[in-house]
Amino acid sequence: MTDWKPSEGIEATTELMDIITCDVSVAVLASAGAGKTELLAQKANYLFFTDKCVWPKRILSLTFKTEAQLNIKERINKRCGHKATRFDSFTFHAFSKSIVDRFKNILPENERPINNYDIVFRRQDVSGSNKILMDDLLALAIRILRAREDLRAMFSYSYAYVFVDEFQDTTNEQYELLQLLFQNSDTKILTVGDINQSIMLWAGARQTVFTDFLNDFSAQNKFLIKNYRASSEIQDVLAVVLQFVQNPRSTFQEVSTIPDNCSLHAFSDEYQEASFIAHSINEAISSGIDASDISVLTKQQASQYTEVLRAELTRLGINNLDMTDLQDALKEPLGQLFSQFLKALVRPEPKVMTELFKVNLALNKVESDEAKEEELTTSLVNFISLKQELITTATTADDLLSYIQSFIHELGMLKIKGRWKQYKSSAYFEHVWQALEVHLRNMCNQTNSLEDAAKLFSAENAVHLMNIHKCKGLEYHTVYFMGLEDQAFWNYAEQTFEDNCAIYVALSRAKKHICVTISKHRKHRNNWQHDNRASTFGAIKPVISLLKNKCKFAATNHNLA
Image (cartoon, rainbow, N blue to C red; front, side):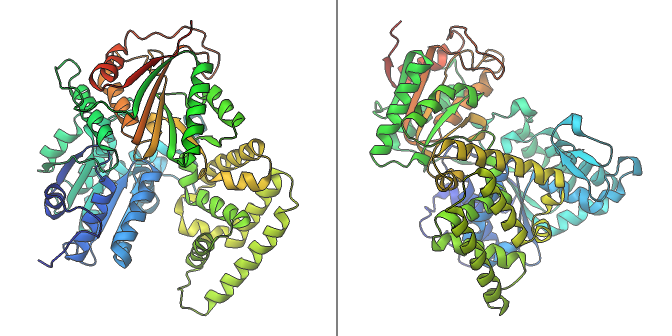
């Protein structure tokens, strides 16, 4: 075998090398912060470098969220260089859509989408073969594959290896897709997940997916435990929480050292809570921590739970963004174009301009050594320079949006649709555009100038606020976990495991500092009305007890009532 070593700076532990060099299907159970994305990148690098995945064979990567798909693709490009062209990275939805788009004629005519069908996101917007629900694409892809064995074989011949991230969240339909394409074939599948991060069961995740995979694909079970993200104190805390998740009624050891960076705070109301958190964040930023390295997490309804806090942060001049509905839009290619162009308008750093030049060349299918490169680059520079002059006199969000629209026109809408196939659906393009436009308008309302709004747009200098289920795969220096109350975990008795997993996910986002808060009174819980009930803690009491007594969180009662 060709001598291969992990990339510089990567610790070649026995467990890591065992997973990378194993040439059978494998189910990896990884702890939070163990480096799951890096594992996939190193595995791909190994397969390409050693010709285990010999040309023209390819590697397929399937993820659940667009952000994860982009993160993996970016890491693969970094680790594998030009060989990354044989690495196909999709979300399950995008992969299903690619199957439907290519082979929809196999479907009966009355089930077949038209050529230029639109994707919609609400069941009530579905219209025959013209408008297809995003979640129905997987079912259509499965119907196509069931009908044609030769198509199933084509995929297994093309892909020698398949990576599936966040495998614990796999639904029955997604698992059936994997079975149809790769069961009883020579394709090796590497699944990576954390059974203690199963927070998608409410969305139909298959509870027995790891056991099923081991049996159906004759796979081996391996572990990736070491947490590279968190401090040693937080690693110690997470180890205790992990025992609790696995068996809340068992007797388990407490932390070996009392952590001085983990705390639990009780308040009389959300206004007192917001004041404490906001001033704590202000102190952290003053000490040199980037605002974007701080996150505030809630179990649900982040916009409502953090409403008072966001007002207090804004009063203190601290940029903050509710990322719950925004995160995916910013990670979209269209969101990246928005962000890069706005940066070029107000902060034209070489890195930003280089990224825009690369996109422009790629859209025009021009290699960097071709003569046309200078022409395209000069044209884009002149365009941006003109808009830079205009923004100094612009006064409204409409002005900024008109500049962005002209930028998209400059790049070429047909070229954009050709490169990113999802935008061939006008409904999907409008869906993403609308989310970005609303965000930009909010930034214009929140800041004192269009330049400040443009800077804040990409969320690079703002505290991030979101629901727990949006934070998976992310990491922050400091995490504030708001609302450890029965009302947030309203079904704790019936879904204890899933809710404990969610708590584990929240705590495991932190690298250095964790602050958990509860409030005796909280009005802002619901979308449609103020919730004036006093908080209760009977159901969630075991978790509070765990943090205080086993994890040794420093507990402070600010309750003045």
